[in-house]
Image (cartoon, rainbow, N blue to C red):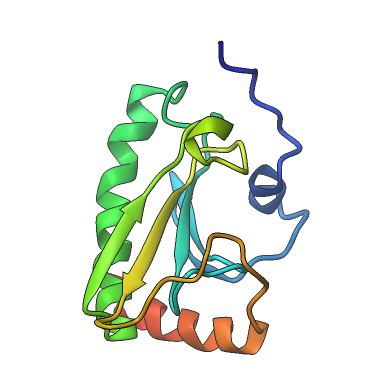
Length: 141
């Protein structure tokens, strides 16, 4: 059984403005932010504003709104970061690899011959993340 949504998780707190983030966009349905523990340069996240733990308990409308936004961001990341490809991933429950229990989708650029860092392997330099965000924002349409 899925545990109830807890509104004190880090992503809920980012959405409420209680914790700073490097924001890529702020739409009525979702925000995009840089992942502070990236697996690859340009790794970012899409967070729906509607509360849900993950895909398993999200409202259908939330899910329907999310994929077009993720696609827009994926195109912007590929263009802005000069990536060779993009991985889009989403984890559900601890056994599925989820560590923050607010629905979120990872957009991870891939570069030929470059291995991904392990998930949550360390904090990135904020100035570097800001520069990457600038490039992604410029390509976000």
